[in-house]
Image (cartoon, rainbow, N blue to C red; front, side, top):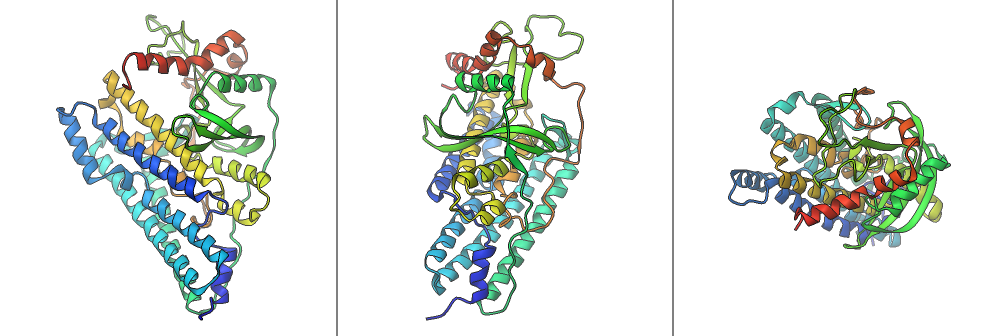
Length: 459
């Protein structure tokens, strides 16, 4: 019986590739199935609902040639990663020559899947830019002021392509070790985020209690299974410089689909937009335009519209979710290998994929809302790709067993700009909201959904 070379065995123990220590494999696969289902619904929604329309046939032809499930979302790569983790655990349970050979083959498949998925992702961007020529000069600003241009995004994708090349080299090194060559494996290098115990300000504690009790997404659709936090974590996402913020982590189960997911709530940053009376002829000295509610909400229904700062799409780099998730999971499951959990930040990857599925489902609803209100034709597919495909998450750039380059990709963009035209009311105004108004604000999502159903938006 052939013996597994010591160098290869050491690589599996100390620095595995495409690994997710602690991940629930079955739950991750279930989440991918729901993601694929939601992608099909998104294609249908983007095509419009009238099968006689020219737009319907153009988009159906486009999605037949360039399906979103293979080009916008790297599902085959993620499936390969899950299979690699399954093979890693099988090898660790029975470290035999055959299980080692199967693990090496899984690593090779994952590396090829990463490269192929990334090539398709870059191709789709270029095709959409060709379809939307005006977007070539596009400047993307997320809800916090992080600026990305199309050239910067292209540079980031090129950086990811370098990582694809590095992954092939890493697999080749382990293949040589498997064949008996000597090699040196070191522990994965990573920067452990400085996450500490936080404290909830009384006002924000009240706000957060209301958003859960009154049914802000995702709490309206889900049952809370576990609660972690508050945590304090300094990050650049919201102010452009590393600033401490307070977070809560929830593990959830969807009431309808029973899919498990996570939610990272930012509990010291509440984004409220003033709801203007649509009949008003003037919108104040600030010159702000009214916030458009397809569901027919007005200032009489709610004085503000609330946008949770933790939504995946409000920031170009929501990978801080996995920093917080890894920290919380290490406290919950100390039996896991702490080196791998900290380096990979994927012990709760199955819950992240559930959150991505829920995010896609929300995107489908928003797209159907645009189609129902006749505004879908003006929607930029480039913007949708940039803000809803989450390459920082789907390509596992937070995971050091996948991201092998020393420098992290710069998804936040090239600069940060504080906008004087921000639609969000100042912090002082948030502090002045009465309890009655706060209850109306946090009930507005549910009210809009009720009215949209009554109007036949989603029937």
